[in-house]
Length: 242
Image (cartoon, rainbow, N blue to C red):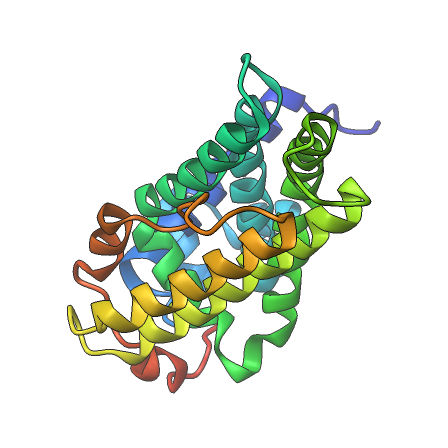
């Protein structure tokens, strides 16, 4: 007789594994985390774990999916709700995106170490594709509104949104490299501001906006990321545990 699966219990246990993985990635780093660590954190058996995830990599990918879904839920109201003009909506979108990342700084710093590891190109691609798939439609909706208002100089909302998202991804990469290359609390503020200014200018040019129309990164967001940031070199040189 086939075993009956309780969907609520299954989802709850899966979430328990993801919560444990997030805690371990934040506190130890992905390279130092093993499946056995997750089992100890949850008090479960290896057989139970493999009922939900077939590897440590699969667990990480599920964690990325989970956070991408949370990000979309956080940004969706900004893209679709309220009586805002498109430019204000776009600024709120970027502000909320920066704020969401600052609130999850420890996890994202730990994931950045994975992101830039030579052994994790697949994880890097998976993260980028997963997050982009969630937020691209939101950006396209804002661009479309701006086109209708005659504020954004764009011919195609989806195509322009892809360009904007590409620039956002690029600035994330550039700032991530600065944060992880520096000693704790030593990432140069001037270099971070220079990168943010350059990409803000590019975003404004793509949309046909006057200089100073957008603020991609404010001083408070920069300060949050500089606080206790750590270099990636030690983590990247540590063998990954399975």
